[in-house]
Image (cartoon, rainbow, N blue to C red; front, top):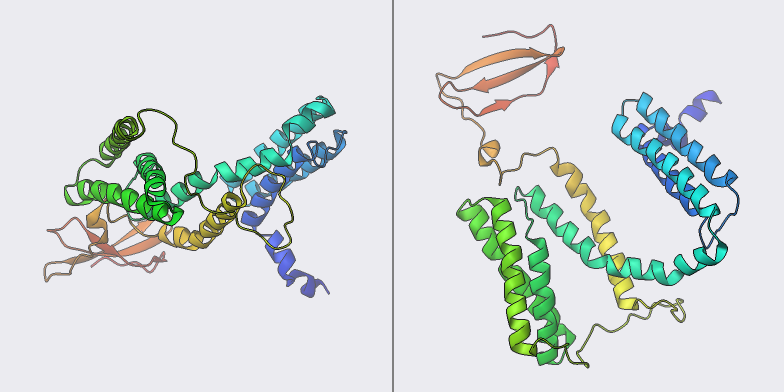
Length: 318
């Protein structure tokens, strides 16, 4: 029975410090939300109990070597307890006026552009380019997308124009950052200022600085079966786009985690070049903290190819 309990996949998961750390952070968030609508528990016992469990998970994670994640879970538990106690000190009317379904719907809707921009920045970062010009690309795509939908009479044309203009500005930035090897931070800042100037100038030239006229074709609402009538002010199209963005973020997580083990070739092109052994190349072995690494290095090249670590005590130098 004891062996079967140890081989239980659920218990094995709970013994994983990474799982317990994220579980502690989640419990800390739950501790804060227990005292606000729609749950609205008017006692401090629940947030304190859940927050203490989150802190215990964090301490256990720290003892297993995941210090940063464990301390984050402890901080989330303490913060959840504090916010829960503060929420119980507030009136029910104030809480109902602040935390409602409309606020949550607007939060999901307005976070959609930031999610897509963050995904684009993640892919750019993993390729070795620090793209801080995302704000300018978003601004250009948004302005010219609305203009294309206004003059083209269709939201499809607006989307195509937005993608084309944003991609064109990204191509310009990529030419300076990769081909000309310009400073990526300076280039991204220049892209942001360039987009700000172009959109501001053409806004006054095309619309005379006034509001965009009504009747511009927009993305139609998506009728989700079983959703009924939506009471939130956020359109269903925006909410569906939000969930699409979160699904894309989850699908891109394996790419992000696997690429952390690779060198960024854009920022350090020499990192992707494997040194070719020459007749004068020497093979050396160096012991580092109990493990030895075998390297094939050329005396004329700073790059080297590192093999997998071998057990200490079997190292030899030739």
